[in-house]
Length: 598
Image (cartoon, rainbow, N blue to C red; front, side, top):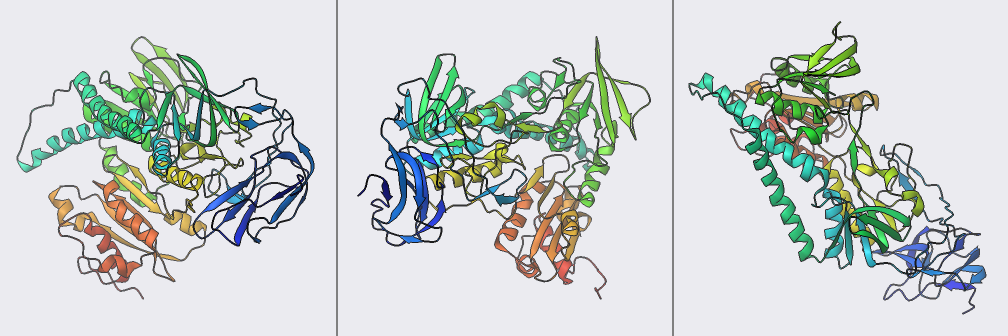
């Protein structure tokens, strides 16, 4: 074979394999082992690497061609034989990386045509890496450790880089898990108080913040210890330190021990997000984000929650049950923007009786630290005329991704101005051997989304034909009452011009909810009128987060109203409200009297 020609190498028993992606173009200067094309059989997809470095003069293949061993891929105008070898890779100071997926998904979830990315990189000044792996995962949150474990299960040598001493990321250490532990404690307090109407009275609870925190930390400890054991069982090498990319095959990890350079074949970015910081808030221990609020060092008399979203309202639920007088300020005209208003209404009505104030369409303009708290100034439709004093402030106005903090530009990875990394449905970035998952690829920033994305990325790297193509990602607010929704909301259906019908079942007609003395709940299901298939579901009431799973499965499976309504649900349960909502849509319900639809 002419040294200037590049052919399909030995690809095993595969014959007539389809070319699904061409990763280079005429004129590109490529390095040895750079991916040229992607092939896909009925069992797996694979990238074909270049056996040598050079400049491409002609490409002989098109997407859709069927190829076998020996088929000509491209010609090289020049063959580079003296490129510097760095850490096992041939990299040149003027090398151009033009690898990109055919399609890319923006952080907003909109798929569009990809753009070739060209990056010029100077030669790296080191001779070899300290560690080598097939798959490197940056970030050990739910998405990161899932990706690492899945890749290891599929036979890859994996290194998992995490900046903190324990695995689990924000969710396990300072998010989902500790907040749910404290929310359970809050529920016990509220339930004990509610039993007065049933003839059972308890004394006023005595709250020991120190013991409560130790119990919360013990829950975290059990899970983090379990993750460490799972990593060891899979022989995943965990490296503690802060990682940043040097190029598309090397990552530097800085730690107290010094620095280590890791060479990888593939990388999965799972670097997560951090709370948004409001510039006018003073640097003070009394001003908390969600992480600080979970420490629960003491119970303040008053607290201002800035932000009426899920995180702020969950923490408000905890502190209110502990005895803190809560005020919530939200710049929009409602709480929990994103959920339908008829679902939020029962929650708003319930907490309005518990919170001191809920100021909508109002914003904080200034905060002054005082000896006994903070003087807060407001403006807006419902703003108080004078500043108000609060002992503590919780800022919960969202999170921002870490995409601009990991040296992604050194690897040629595209990052938008907000720090999000665009990916395609296989979680691949514009650089073919680098993937990204979780908060860093866009909304919604949810652990359960990240875990599924992590599996997809790991499986694609290992040659499986996986895609992240979930029809819906459920959202849950673990407040009191809980709120959960999945699929389309009514607002979304209307904005997209979709003809839909809905079935609703009020929990005031549920024997189970009445026995719980929680009749404020509601279950609502949206159906597409033409097909009668479920397109959305929303639930408000105790345990809504557990109940939503049936609706998610129904959406994924394309169930219609009859499928849901005819499925026998146990009685008396809250879960039967889903079947009854479907019956309400079909007009077959007997637990309510609904006039027939004309």
